[in-house]
Image 1 (cartoon, one colour):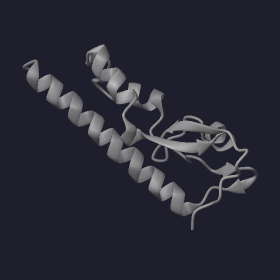
Image 2 (cartoon, rainbow, N blue to C red):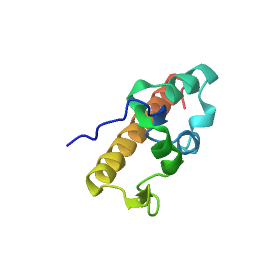
Image 3 (cartoon, one colour):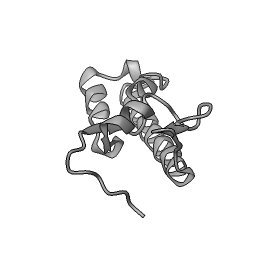
Amino acid sequence: MKEAVPATAKIHVDHVLPQNAIRQIEGFDSLPKGVQNEIMKDPANLQPMIKSANCSKGCKVEAEGAGWMTWNGKPVSEKYKMYLEEAQQDFRTKVSKIIDDNNALKGK
């Protein structure tokens, strides 16, 4: 079941895997700046989210500690948390592959 978004809601673009977590992936900082920017703007890692939810989620990563626990005083849906953890891991894997491919091109 999907939630209805009020017409007056402010929508943000949320990074499924937060940008700070992407920057911490080993080898990310060795990528060319253009590739880093493409990764940060990759639509596969973006989702629309109500502003208040995005601010509540912040830079939390599900696989690192407790993850995103509450929003508006209520627990975050376990189903959504499972989706989020899988999506974050999938994107982390994608970034790691880009890093590996870049290193292979450079002969590392």
